[in-house]
Length: 163
Image (cartoon, rainbow, N blue to C red; front, side):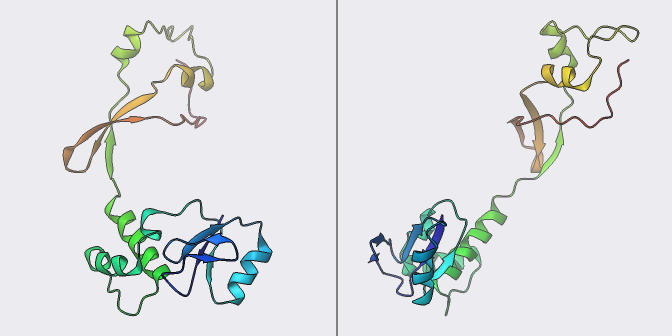
């Protein structure tokens, strides 16, 4: 989808497309419509997934929020304000993971996972080990805060050797 910003930041309808406070979504594949908007001075941001909350806010509200995000909104268009607010919020929401806890071998043992021994390992290839690794791990975040984090994927690093 392409995000379309109207020159009139309070705009609501154009070419059958519904604008909310000067912004709308159009499929990227609709190049003819996008070209028509661009020719009329609309700003187009291709490849965007959705209108975010602040996309839909009136520009006056964005100008009030801007300074709270460290942005001087004077002379900024709605699109510039939205990008600035998104960038500021992304920075504010960054979480630093200081360390991950070791995988608790006692938990693995309690789940009756038998790894075999050095001479006869149960898991002779990394993919078999990955299959029994936990689906969540505990991490320490900034300022000592601890959190349980779901594991999206364990990656084979080709450094596993049995025994």
